[in-house]
Amino acid sequence: MLISAVFLVLKAPDAIRRAAYPLRYEQVIRQSSKEYGLQPTFVAAVIRTESRFNPDARSSQGAYGLMQVLPRTARFISERSGIQGNYRDPQVNIRMGAWYLSYLQGRYSGDETLMLAAYNSGEGRVDGWLAEGRNLRQGIPFKETHEYVKNVLAAQKTYEELYGRNLDRNNK
Image 1 (cartoon, rainbow, N blue to C red):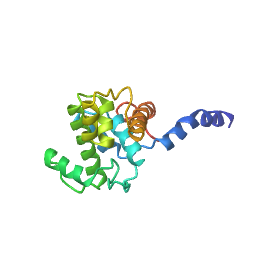
Image 2: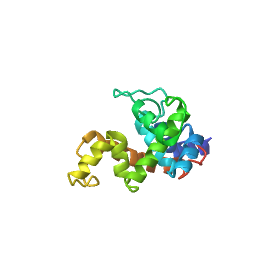
Image 3: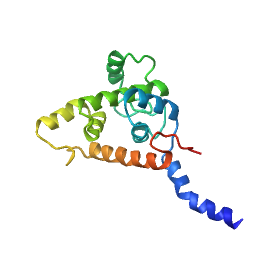
Image 4: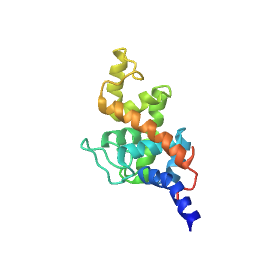
């Protein structure tokens, strides 16, 4: 009895962290990440930050789903990637979001800060900041975008610790 109580206490921190950092849709996350050259923990971190894994999430800006894809972004992605289907469907939403992150990865030479800033506040805004000569790694002008980037990168580390780099550790 004492041994099981000690075991529960030692496991409690990870159990609590797993509740705060849930993992669902891991197969489609792994598959989409592999297809588009991303780390699965990065995609999971974006999902957690965007929607807390709520497939019915809707933002005040009109973005939908796990990865909070805007209707116009869904059209752009569909036209460029060939991904078809309802962008509100969790599997389609994850594929579209992963494709878009991959697109941003190419556009911003793999710089995760720029990728995430563009995912959050738009490519035009990030391009404008860069044109002004701003170094976004030293400071993003919008507090919301700054916090978003910081939160995604911290969540990515947590996902890697809890579930493994490829999200293949048992999540029970």
